[in-house]
Length: 106
Image: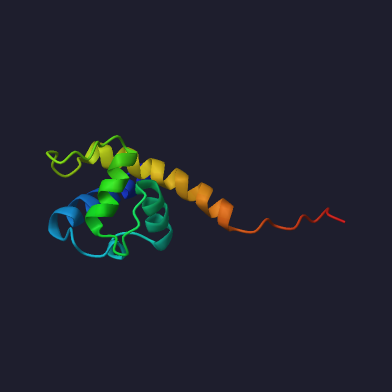
């Protein structure tokens, strides 16, 4: 229950940030690894990555279609996308870390 509460708070933080300061740098709401994975997913090459870009990328992971007429993503899409982002981060971190030397290796 405590883990789900922490995730819920994180989702509400993202939702509030995109409504309050959409043009702010994404570093204000996400870690460097989250931003890197998010940028790769949305295939953005612009030098700036805003809160809105990050939140919409997370929501796209959760099924948000990001059409022009659509408003900001809802909590359900953010929840699903944030869970998927965390799974992708584990893979990213495993890929980036060097393999540990085995004690049995000769």
